[in-house]
Image 1: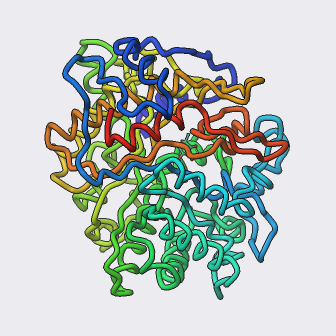
Image 2: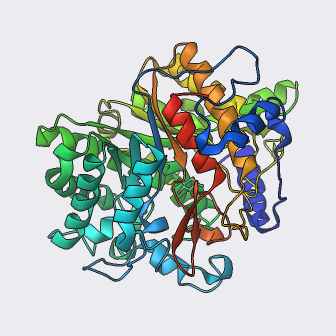
Length: 497
Ligand code: FCB
């Protein structure tokens, strides 16, 4: 692995280690333009029939008819009920129960108790007017040990959830894997073991056969890159390893698993759609030097093309393979035919956008914009436009959905029972506007899921960061619509800003 890559990895490790000391930002400076319009929209909350037009003075921004306004969650982050109805342990149970791994020792044992409160949560979604709900299925509820006979009680839970969505006219969008690998598979080598990809295909097949016809859109693997980087490079996510060689072998096996799952869905004869969920980061040179441009190109390879080129073009990017080196575990782990599996045709691409990355000539990263409570997140709505138009430009008119975008805020439940998250409204407004501009410029974006529906277990950050449109009062599990939820309801009702 090159010197540049080593520097980059070390630098990112240092960054993630300081996450706990992240600066808190109230109203993001980067989105100051248009704040007056946002304030006008906020003032009306849910009763405003027609929110103020966008701050650019060009009038209301209407989205295409049937645009899929939605919200997203994931199983381990909201469900709780960690030991119920035959659920087995996942790597996140193990990780969160290991002292020192999560903030305050928080775990997902109870989380937002969604497993028991899903009916209330479905009603809440209906009340917001959501048209699409993106959730994930817990593998260890379906197969406690990650293989073998399915657990009917686990399948029944998701069947009830999916039926409840249909009853409320909300389109289900299900992710098969949002990081909660069954612990038994981790004990057998986890994603370093090629066999895990085969086990994933088996689990996918079971799930498709049980729910396939009721779920119009399936997503295979959530953010493979985050498993690679957070789980295997920096180690602040499960399984907590710091091993660059293993990390990129994991990148290959995760993508192999994705491709095998696509094939498994096709083999069932289902007519429903499927695609990957990738977190994409627009990468920009930090300055005008040729060195920064070169370093940014490679950085982009690791952040974006390592997943986009393989899945959508059938080839890993040569610059990344060369940087990893022919003797790397990843390169040695690629077998004939793997890329054909990985690039099995998909129906759509799910994009998750949170932050841009600025790269120096030395391969370090720097911040140019205010960060949110999550130190890794710079607030830059233009990055949404850039990444969407770039994907369409480089990979053709594949339908796109945004499956995550959102902001953590220091939300407080006031004495009058309200949660005033003005900064989240500004953030969403400016990102919606950027997405709208991308659509105007020809990007086939069909839906947008805010992260997140509910406050939840934010991985190693525990419950401190609140990302929800809906506030969860954890001691009582009471749900309270934040101001942003009221505002979002109006956006949905008006199909735009
Ligand atoms: C994404 C994850 C999601 C949540 C948000 C804040 O990377 O997919 O589970 O943690 O970040």
